[in-house]
Image 1 (cartoon, rainbow, N blue to C red):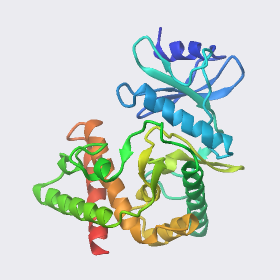
Image 2 (cartoon, one colour; image 1 turned 30 degrees about the vertical axis):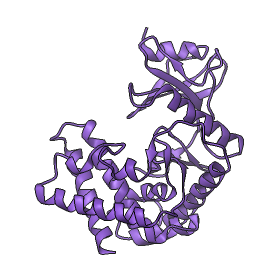
Image 3 (cartoon, rainbow, N blue to C red; image 1 turned 90 degrees about the horizontal axis):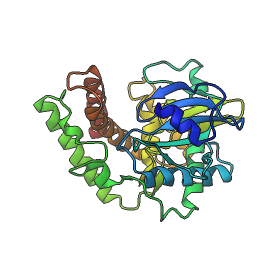
Image 4 (tube, rainbow, N blue to C red; image 1 turned 180 degrees about the vertical axis):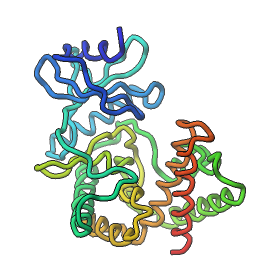
Length: 306
């Protein structure tokens, strides 16, 4: 039996074959369960997150949804489980479907006016602040999630990989990246009072949806414990080459109510993580290796200039 069919049975079956909509860390399918529920069925990437970690993610998003936060709500299997283990050992989970479109996509220009783009960034900042405030009021001590702290970002074995070893970097560029890594670590060490907690950690435009009801956040698969401002840096990273980046950054931070002076640092931290992320997901000569490396070099230069 195919994994998606096996997973569907654990949730009581589907009315029609699920439709694949995304295949990155997870394979995500749109489906209508026999119960009538419109859902996203997720087949988790083997070995990426443990069952305990996936369950922790869903416990968190359940608590957020219960508080009225606009995010997918977990759907339990027929057996009452948040996570189902397939015969192959692969994990599956199901969350409610949100009928909305992404606010943007990497490499594509914003379709509205610049004033509308600024308003969107302010609204996103407000939503991220709400996410952090609601989460900080929860007891997350028993949840098992990765670390996006100083060691998880800049240690010898970062969560997404040793970004300074990206195969597309020249020796000179590696030296630049290492210097930026040392400077970033020093800033984080000197600013021990930076707010930390459970964060989304992957607030790219594709993971922020919009419809008539407003903005929604999806795909908490990379969430973990780390710096609040990392979520802001991630929300800005796809605008790193935008000529009005400073204005977009100010709008996002205005909405959030903090973080203005730290954005060059946290954009660089996200660029570092992404340059490590691609290393295990593409061949050494894949053009995406260079794309993320060049973005990191640009962010590192901006960071060093501030």
